[in-house]
Image (tube, rainbow, N blue to C red):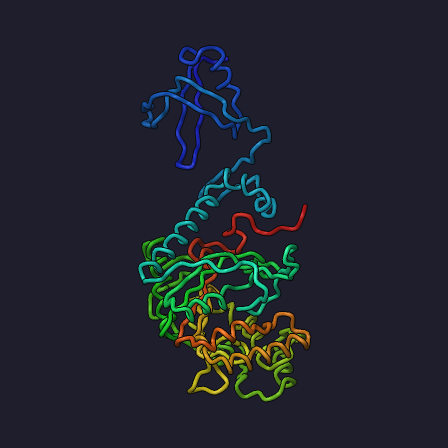
Length: 430
């Protein structure tokens, strides 16, 4: 056994070289030091010095084994900027995130950045005069979005409840109650498939401003995202994969029908029958077999043909009324609503509109959604009589905005799967 040994100690702040001798530690402690394995958790005392090569090193005067790593950690190596990872199975990394965080610094950095982004959003909105609130996670009626909910049961009250798909209708009840600027940053749950863009449990920020409209929220969205880019990267030009994205305002604005026409050649504003819409979509090899309206066909074409091409930031505006049951009608464009969605890097990162505050119009739209639900559309909205009653007490003109935090983190950390921005994404059982 040698009389002196070197090792490296790593914690959340970095790595430092260790130097230990048998003379300083004694036979037993030095034997412990020599027998340490990769991943062992230790406590040390010592003093700093510089080696002849100038490396700051801890001269160890005492060592204590605090926890033994009894499973071997994967060894990660880097050469010329390329990471060679023995822990290369992505699904295994997601299942064993605790190991992933230990061995992959870039993974830990992503989640540190995520925490910073969330903190910056809260700070930004608080400075804008918003009040952070909390609304129910279990709801008797799943509303605020077109999605299938998770169902649960309250034993004591013997009632069916749904994990919320969105907090929207409760936040707008607060606007009715006189809270002029509110936001919530919390989890939503949607009983849907998983993909690089979707996880059934995800984080959403929703914000509402009384006496405002879509344009107010468009300005807020642009200012918030550019603020975050500047805070995280120090610039509005960020690299995402092979694309250099310029977030500098003002962002481009294009109508929903124009952007579909731009990338598919189809002008859905001129189509008058479902058969014609399906025929044109099928010619582009877009599967619309489950679509039962013209605008649902259009939305499938948008998702497949337009959305992947929206790399630079753009606001898609003027959505069809049918696709926006909670948005206020556009008085200058019959059949459309005052709504926009921001797209960056080929995906939607938010949704906003001038809120519908007419209880009679809202009830008619809910009734239309109920008909669609009865016809087999399990993502259509449910009737919410209590929300209608709230509107009958009077809701001022209101602008609302929702931003998907996980997708926003993807953009700002150059991550290409939503599961890379969620610490413990949902996985199938092993």
